[in-house]
Image (cartoon, rainbow, N blue to C red):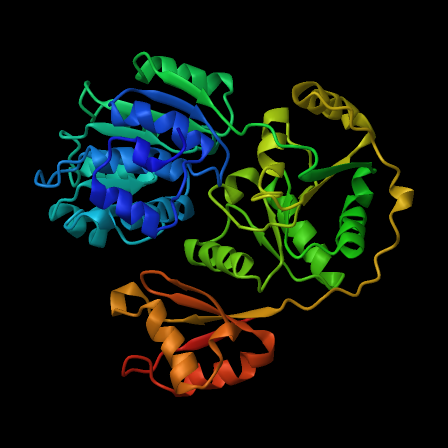
Length: 458
């Protein structure tokens, strides 16, 4: 069974899924949706980008009683970025039927607008555990009518420290409900969570390992102090169009990103010390191709789904081999070849043995002498990002920004990259050759009849 038509879905939903490009189910969708549609509990292991949002989204939207204007489904995510991605995808899938309201509840943004939105009720709430707990304790959200509870990327929620919040939230949900738990790995805390809060959960594990011919994996041994130099050499020799570099601490993220900048690489670091607006901007610049290198911790990179990611670099090896598999699984997707590089100190050779045991491989450490010195010459990113101080709250849409660039400024549409509109800010990527013209047009011309403040980010 691979076609959505094999499921007991309504014709309008099937038609909408086809319009959205959902032609065939991914493995996690094919194995999860029959259980989700039946209202059964599910414990599913799947990596980011496997289609797991639709794996639970199609089911909960199908089972939704639109006429009952109360919160019937609660989706918890570890980060605001992932919550917004999930909410956005659910809204796309929900187009098959009118009047489905999806509310996003996350930290890092004002509390009052969320409270007002909740006062007008909604069918589905998507959010982070911390902010959801705040609303529940203040009495601004009611979960008495929830029939489906989803924990997306549950292992990361526990890593971040949301275990207590999840516990509190569970106390507000009716005892009889469906619980869908999705996780990239199945460490003991996740299995314990399933045992406590799920009933006879069906267990699904798909796409956990990755074919060696899709992801080329390299391991280099290096002294701790030489790791930044080796990372720069790898970037210089292989020249990946985009690279996600993992560090185990936020301090190392900052230090490595600064070092790479001194070597001429366009790099940004994402970590827990950043304000929400800065985090959003960094993720936008990385995803739209204007900054090709992102240095991050596992927690900070969670929810980041970049199509066509060329390389993953483990500046620090993770403490668990399952996390290594999840990290490198971000590259080599959709039949494209990816690269994964890992730097190992002499004392960490046992971690490579653990990875080989888990994956059934026989990788060995390569000599760093095979890497040539970095030239300090790196390619300039092809795109430039501009931010605009207007977004959904000011009724600014991607089409308005595109029109201002193409119709008003005469810039070819092919030179305009990804456009992201958030509540109060919007971002647009422009090919570097057209950046000056775009900056002049956006700064001087009106968009939807008003002037906006525009900033160039490089």
